[in-house]
Length: 296
Image: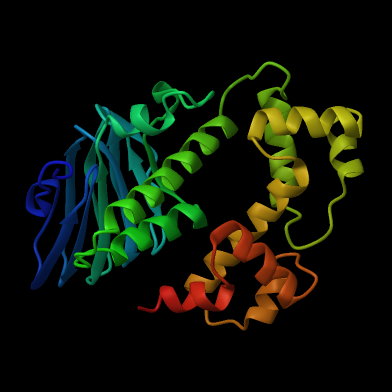
């Protein structure tokens, strides 16, 4: 059984270039295309999703441009190496961007029945919760996408299992992220309070932030805050903070050559080993391995 329909880089992500390469592979429900270009000029996007699609930017920065989702203009966000974009089936993405002359991206398409087959009986995994999203970061999705990339050309009988396992990870993360952005969940926090707490967390990732301080910020008891925060985000406050610290560390590992020890302390970890343990738990790799992955 062949994966989703053929991907045409010249039609979907059109750009003039001086050199070009394109590799791909298909599995039962998944197709992955890796596209490399040098001497790239302005790139134009014109994509209507018949299946679910994930784009991982591997090299090059999209510095300016215009983006339209389902025909409506959205704010352009600069997309660096590691940034992700997700377009669910039956949605569209169009626009243009200018950036670095050397570019590489991974485009993964996943059959639209995949969610029904693997998440059909999972509470909270309704397809209408998934919306288009451009230029976001998620270390676990990045890792799963790059792992799918590593299966291109393997010709291994186990590849179908490996690839679909990573595809399930991607959608589990997408569903969890969609839960973080619902306007209201019964038993959860109001959007205003949740935003205030998340802003406080973002401003304190390099230091200690207690549950008592968050509860005071929200005007709630610690017990109620813990329950409501988990309903709204899918994670208790402590786990949410650790995840955001790992995400910040992952950005620094990709974009800088700073020592891992320095990154650990700046992201609020008590030691490099504390960072390594949290990073392995969230991403499945050590910081050193993760950094090495992005240099290949």
